[in-house]
Image (cartoon, rainbow, N blue to C red; front, side, top):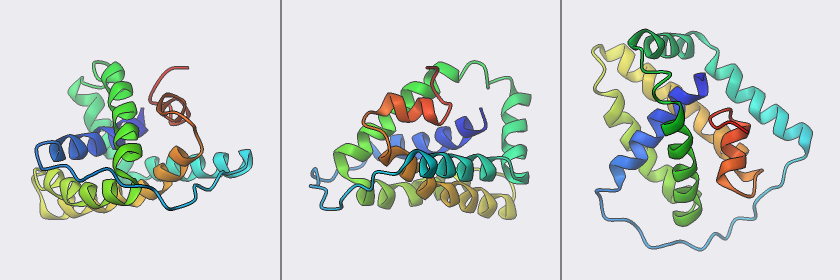
Amino acid sequence: MRSAIILLAIVAAVSATAIRQQPKKEHLTKDIKHHTKEERVQNAAKVHQKLGDLSGKAYFQALVASGKDAALKDELCKMCIKLITDIETFGEDTALDYLEPEVEIMCDGLPWDNLKKDCTDWVMSIVDDLVDILNDYTDGENACVAMTLCDA
């Protein structure tokens, strides 16, 4: 469920970009690196380790305290699959170029300056790890299951 917080932040940022003019579909020239099972486990462990740090726990506890964690479960799965589809459609670099400013805008809604910066740094620190996980799966649903955002 901790990874749900990150995905929610990422999906909110990507959804906000839908209002903007979308770029033309890019042809991916980058060779997708297929990781071994051991590398996939290591990538997933990196994400979960970052989600378990103090900031991750604080954000997760805030979500639980608000009572919204259970209500978001199905929506998070749908949003995860949508995010992966957007990355496949527009390309990883373009999706990440749109993502960072949107994360900053979203985090600017927090009440304290140090919390705003921590939020942005924390979300962006795991984006590359999440993209590595996405590259290991052939479809969005399997990637979202691997990140524990969708049920198997």
